[in-house]
Length: 302
Image (cartoon, helix red, strand yellow):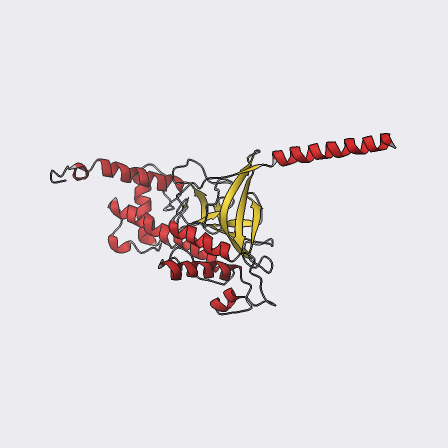
């Protein structure tokens, strides 16, 4: 009997040691945000935290009612409601400017894409092209972008690329093996507001609607949005595009301006603003600034 008890004790001790070692291996540290968290983003996260534990009543939610459909699937409605609460309490204007107002399946993701603030999880934005960090020398791949507090995470739970769910990043953490976990606050999960964790490499993540403008993307004819406007402004500053053609729509005038720039800088002449072309544009603008004498005139009255 004593031998049996001794064996059981040994097994328990080994199991406890193994559990302790496993816990030690998965010990995580909170990652500091790469960009300063703006006051309105802190307020937004506070509002979302206040709602933790809210549970739908036979499908009814106050978020759905606020959005116009009390019995809607309400993950997006919850986030939009939180943004609206911040606007009401603090006099900010984030809804429709920093975040979308929507309830449709892909509407929120497409809104961020148009604003130029969407990062695809795998670095390739469908119907657009590859993405890259402005100061980088290669295209993004899975795990290169770590979402920031206030970013929205778009998920798919099927094999297609349509969004099925959205959540808001509270913070990210990293374990001793370098594995990053995204900590989110989400509604309709499945019937309440709660905190959830997802691995940075989770294949269900489609991408992120970001608070900050963090990546660039290939631009070509037919595209429109904030990124196109920024490209056109650069071409205008270099004297390659008329100011009246700065419209946010990548049409023939923009394509021709890009072709002229590519020809002058030894780039492939195709009218497509890929990474090489956009980075060359930035370098040309920097040279223009430093080679313009008026930018260096000292005002004695200052």
